[in-house]
Image 1: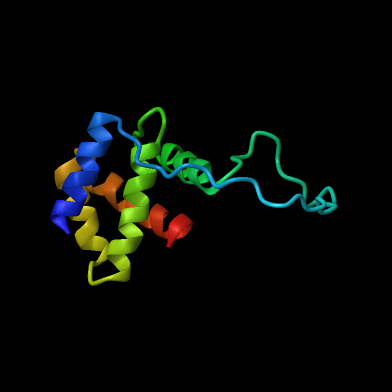
Image 2: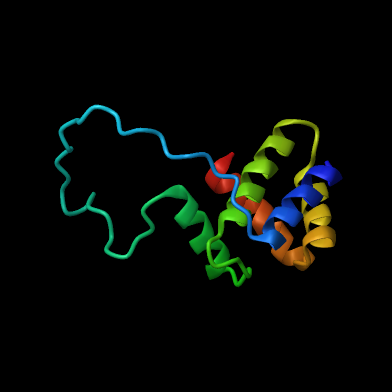
Length: 117
């Protein structure tokens, strides 16, 4: 588990992005009609990655400009939690290897669970 987090830390520090290429567009489907109550809020994040990063930033957790490393870390957190890792253990590992405080690392794990797990 620690090796995984260290590898993610190196990705974050190097600013690398291992995100897969976007899928080709699928068949065109008619757009659903929405009411005013269902309409998206102007300036609302368009996808889960943006929502996740916005939640971290709102909680005063520093992120990179692109946020790609933080998204990769969040996805890795879910994979680890699906195994034998505990949220508290991951938060400790993230704090010790990434330079975030324990409080920030706990927010990262909890927010990752909310948006990705």
